[in-house]
Image 1 (cartoon, rainbow, N blue to C red):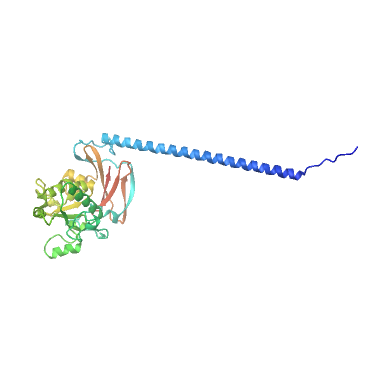
Image 2 (cartoon, one colour):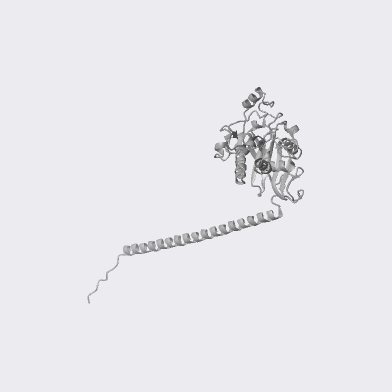
Length: 365
């Protein structure tokens, strides 16, 4: 009986095949796992993004509702512990016995704060030794000729120019045109020349025009004699009355009130300003300060004296808080710290030097 030889397989080949199969399966599992993981992460991130979007939308809706509630109840930023305004027109509430709420410290550069509108310059307060002309701009070019000028040399500091532009543009929209910025910043040298020519007795560096915040306004139209006739007494015209009645809303006040000037009933303030000449001068002080001065019928000197006695005030319009104003001693350092409020309802904070060692900070609500 013959034996049939049995053919045996190669064991190494089998191992290699098994190894390859296992490797393929492993790679497939890893790829599948990575795909599932990536897909899960994408789904998770999409859900997170959706939740964040919903939260942001809900927060915006809440803030809008809160703002509407505050407007309705005239409580935006006001503290219930403060004295309650009567709720009619513009009112000043003395908060000098109340601390500034949510107080924090802000560092301010002296050179930044010097040109923000409140620098007092008169016969008793000359421009500071470190006063600089560098920030002055030409009214014509800075307003894209929206404010006509008597010459291209008429200059002011930027905030004052912006306020003047807005005022003149709105006056024109109300049907009143042909305003001309006749004179703006006047250098100490220019002031000295006027003194030498005996055209003024105010010393160099002691004219309000030396502060770069004031402008003389005239009227002119080459084909309208009636307009031109009002140029030297603008406040007898509708144009002038508009400036008196509306200018303060832009931060521009009449710098030198006299008896019945610029309008009938005006109280003489020459004993405070040192100027008894009828000047068609608008002075930039900022909207918050202008609103307070308007409400109390103060000239700049009176207003700063008032802040000296009442260094923390609130300005309300029809019962709604519009401005909170604080006066703080800062000295003459190049940089100084002021206490400010971090209340969410504050939309703008502006600090300005008053040329007496103090800073006036206005919080707008």
